[in-house]
Image 1 (cartoon, rainbow, N blue to C red):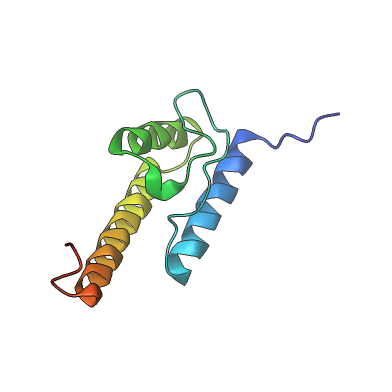
Image 2 (image 1 turned 120 degrees about the vertical axis):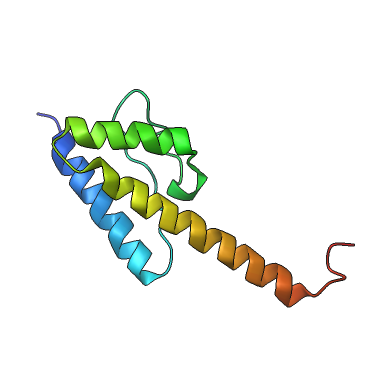
Length: 98
């Protein structure tokens, strides 16, 4: 007997985790589960490229899920990561880059 869960359930668990972590502050560290050939399984969500996210969106659609959901979560994550980096840079002051 195998312990693999159906792809639809794996997707739902992945999106639930992204949503939970996003509401808690950042979904960037959520690891991508094995969902398909064109998906970088094992990579962190915050490290994905726009192309990776498009592939995830296509997989969602093929599973009967809304592909736009993962795009919106990724855009929010990218925005939060950029804002955090900007705050960190500002807190170091103007001489920190030298």
